[in-house]
Length: 148
Image (cartoon, rainbow, N blue to C red; front, side, top):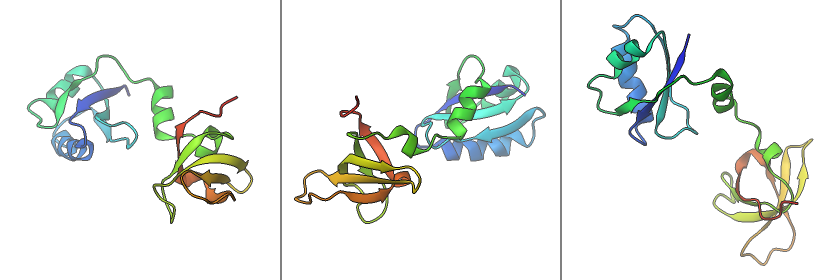
């Protein structure tokens, strides 16, 4: 079934999905509605035609419009199954810790242990000279300054 993208009010993606799913109960041809956390301001709808989408979003408070064209399966797959952070991080990158005791701290990647899923970072703005080991899934890449 074809997949379409809808432009919705930013920050109201989940509300839009809830409202549209209630409306979709009365429609034939709407298969699924998805709000992807990494895709701010958009909702993905699986439906049989453009006209079904147009009738569904008519007079909806959160929906701004329909994006022309279809969402390709490989694009949707990439959005729904994100690559592991450890594959994106390299030595020298500037990262931010997104969880745990060091949440919000920034650091430079010193070493990577892929087998354990850990990354050693030296914290920026602290007198600590020893790298701190944190789980790779609690990191977010800020910049790729040390890329070679």
